[in-house]
Image 1 (cartoon, one colour):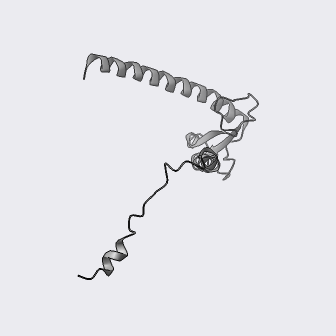
Image 2: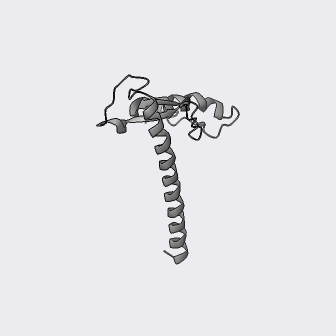
Image 3: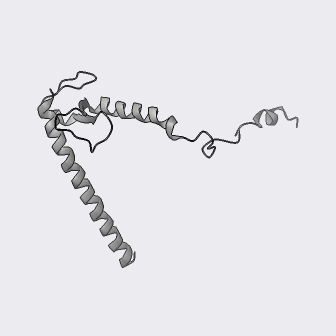
Length: 125
């Protein structure tokens, strides 16, 4: 590996590490606020949490904008890990059709892999 690529990797690593620290710091701020505002109960499945399992309780942003964190907590909802994952999966399913182009056929299959299989079986040797 050349010195340039090593230097480039260390710069990239530093940028990524700084971004992760910044995100963790931002999350810690609104997470702590949300845990003070709301009871430690999942807003969907009503599972209750204690200090022992509090790490499994997440803060969900209702509008999916992680940078919108009003101090009154109006954009937050406490969800367990499972309900949080489910909520994001539902959101992605809901927005996916809106993001695709109706005329874009790049992701569509244009052939049928087994179309000639019946002909092969019916061939007489």
